[in-house]
Structure formats: C-alpha cells, structure tokens
Length: 469
Ligand SMILES: Cc1cc2nc3c(=O)[nH]c(=O)nc-3n(C[C@H](O)[C@H](O)[C@H](O)COP(=O)(O)OP(=O)(O)OC[C@H]3O[C@@H](n4cnc5c(N)ncnc54)[C@H](O)[C@@H]3O)c2cc1C
Image (cartoon, rainbow, N blue to C red; front, side, top):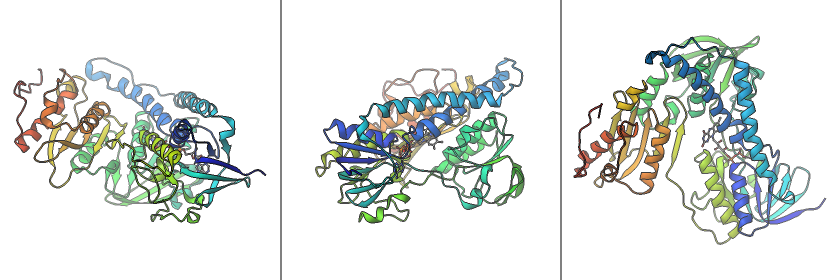
C-alpha cells in the first residue's frame, strides 16, 4: 500500500472543499481531495436545490389558490404528489450531476475516495489503510442532521432533509420538529401542497431570529397557514405506521402524523476525524477553534471551511471560506486574512425573511417600515411584513437588518451591499427608488433613522409617501 503526500490535503468534496482544492491548486500547490462518496454537494443533493424545488411546486399551488382575490377564478388545484416529487428528484439530479461533472474535471490522481481521520496534525489515515502526509490540511467535512434519540426510535417514520426528497409521494400528515429556517421552509411548502402539517419547537425563537418584532410578524404571517407551536415539550411514539405526538407546555395536545420531519439543527461533521490527535484546542462541540478571517486553527497548519466550522452554515459562506482556506493552506506558513462579507441569510418562506449584518445593539437606531399598507404589496395582495433597519448613532450608518415581507430575498441583497459600502440612511435616500416597487417601502425606515440621528434628508427629494404615488 503506497502512502501519499502533497502540499494541501482537503477532507470533504462539498462546496467548501471543492473551493479550497480549486484555489490551492490554482496557486500552485499539489493537492489531494478526499471524500467518502463524491456524490455531489449537500446543496445540490439534499439541501438548497431540492428544498427550493419543493418550494417552487408549493408556490405554483398557492398562486392558483390565491387568484380569486384578483377576480381570476381557478378551481382548487389538484396536487399530484408523485408528479411533484418526481420533478423535485429529476431537477435535483440535474443539479447533482452538474456538481459531479465539476468533481470529475479535477485530475483523477487528486481525487481520493475514502474516509479520512487524523493521526497527527500533518498526517491523515484513510479507511483503506493508506496515509496522506500534507504540509497543510483543510477540514471541509460539512454537517449532518441532528436526530434526538426519541425521534431516531421512530425508525422509517422519521424524515430529515437527507430522506424527504426521496419520498415517492407526498405524505398525508407531517409533524415538522424545529422552527428554524430549514423546518419552516419545508413546513410551508408541505402545507401548500396539501399535506396536513404542524411545526413544533421546544424553544421560543422562530427562525433563530434575534429581532422579536420581526419574529412576531413572521409568526403571525406563517400561522395563517399552519400551526407553529413554540415552547412545547414533545413525546413521540411510533404507533403502527404512524407517529403519535403529544405536546405540553405553551400549548397541549396530541395528533397523529405519517412522519416526523426532524429539522433541529445540523452539527458539524467532525466526530470521526480524531481531532484529539492534532493538538488543536476544541470547543465544547469538538470543533477546533479557528480564526474566521484566515480560517486557520490556532498556530497550526490546519484550516476549516464550510458547515464543518459551525459558523455561518450557508452556501456562499462555504464557498468563500473554502477559497480563503485553500489560498492560505497553499501559502502556509504565509497566512493572510481573507475578506469576509457582511453576514446575510435568507429564508425562502413566503414572504421571505432576510437577516443582514449585526443584530441591533442597545444603542442602535432602528428604522421601521410595515408592509401591511405598502403600495406594491397591496397591488399584489401580498401586503404583510415588517422591515427593521439598524443604524449606528450619530452617523446613521446602516449596520444590520431583519426583514420579512414580499421581495425581501432581493431587498436583503441591496441592504447587504449598502452596509458593505458603508452607506448611511441619508446617502441611500439620495438614490432613486422606482415606483411602485417593494423597495419603496424602505424609504420610511430610512427616514425614521434620519429623524432619530438628526441627519438631514436629501435636499432634493420629496418626503411624501402617498400610496398611489
Ligand atoms: C435542506 C437544506 C436547505 C438549504 N438551503 C440553503 C439555501 O437556500 N441557501 C444557502 O445558502 N444554504 C442553504 N443550505 C446550507 C448549504 O447547503 C450548506 O451550507 C452547504 O452545502 C455546506 O457545504 P459544505 O461544503 O460545508 O458541506 P458538504 O457539501 O456537506 O460537503 C462535505 C463533504 O465532506 C464529506 N465528508 C465528511 N466527513 C468526511 C471524512 N471523514 N472523510 C472524507 N469525506 C468526508 C461528505 O461526504 C461531503 O461530501 C441548506 C442546507 C440544507 C440542509
């Protein structure tokens, strides 16, 4: 058995690992990319893409059902569950095939199939017994669904994001456990596709939101379509081919479902890596402490990237962290800080939620805009939502936002870009807002910030806000 050596070894061929390998090789390093499956990224196979495909089907059903308000009469849509799931899988497989093609463009001798663990800080052991000696190592092993033992005991009646998209048909009833973004996106999609769905969470925080006012608005909007039971203790039992769920606490009840969809977090996949052999300082979850600007773990030649580091578990961050880690691993020991972007996440519910930048601090100035009466939102009969923009005092510079409402996945980008460019409420108000758009709704929040910091409103812009323009 021949042992291997290289400049940079990367564990995990997901979005982060692929980015790290690509960057390290482009920078002239010899690389080895280890993955146990090479089956495509989490995003393409069981994450972003299949979940958005299911949401797209749900959107079609919802649009048909909502047409009557415009005087367009459509019969109650008939949902063909097997056709819905077949399209999800067909298109998902196209995305997965495309990531596999990218993987196959990597030279064959760089791709090593197998599971890796550390023997020491610069040596990996593969499950076939070979060893890899590397000057630097990138850990990009992703994350996996957490399934508490009570739910694991339900056997094939428990679903996660790794199994739900393979169901041949839509179920009759699903209990979604976990009111985070993943659970809420899938719960709303299922209920719109005619699945009797309820959401349960032992915590009281919807979608992990730090902004209570936006959380309350989101809760009120989503609860028009499905029950969301926060602050409940659950007891789950398998009864025949069903799941019997009993809940107590903030509310009490019992109901029977076909499945429990468990979406209670995705911890970093680091448990089999034998990180104890590396001498790294580990946190209480067993994840190495690392510098989020260089991605380097302490003073070592080991770097983290993607969901494996337990920070900002979203795709564009996995990709950016991979590029930083790959560059620094190739340049080791000449490690430089990478440019991290303003934190930005979107939950693809309807309406979507966007969270940008830093949470509000006690001395933040907050500008608020309701979408209950916003012009374009009323035109579209989608008039619900709340935007809260945070700014610093006394300059009115934007620092963060929590926003639920129509178009927020797009408006979230604008606010993220504005924060990245150091814009203030006044400077944004000097820019054009087309009429009638969802973006116009931001004006009242920006003006409220100007008023609180006593910043001037742009001299040549009118302050009127008539709904009809
Ligand atoms: C349902 C769902 C929906 C999502 N939706 C969105 C969204 O809309 N937008 C968004 O930005 N993000 C979304 N995300 C998050 C996004 O998918 C992840 O942040 C991203 O895919 C993480 O990429 P990664 O490279 O860290 O991990 P992965 O793509 O999981 O790659 C890790 C790889 O490491 C391999 N591996 C693990 N351990 C070992 C080992 N010991 N040896 C060898 N190989 C190993 C694994 O097999 C895997 O191939 C979603 C996630 C889920 C689950």
